[in-house]
Image (cartoon, rainbow, N blue to C red):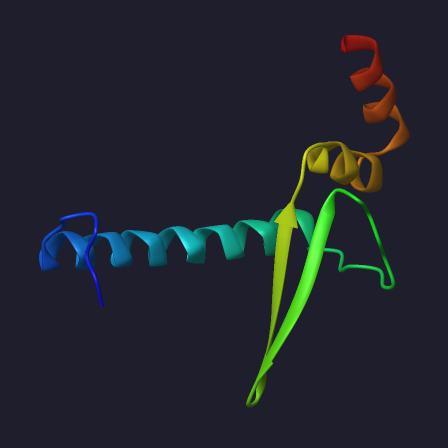
Length: 90
């Protein structure tokens, strides 16, 4: 392995630990906020690029959120009154 960032072992361990905490937070946030009602399949929004990877006894879902992904979630999850209020403020 090469270290082109010139960081110490302790700094690398701290980064890995911090990144692990953030990834766990992000997973919980997405599950509790965006996916709490489930995802309807098949779906093909241009704002979300989804790929699947399989390993033994597991499936991994990778989501890449492109521009306007927030608008997609608003359109899918907000009620009509919130959408109307959004359009009057924009």
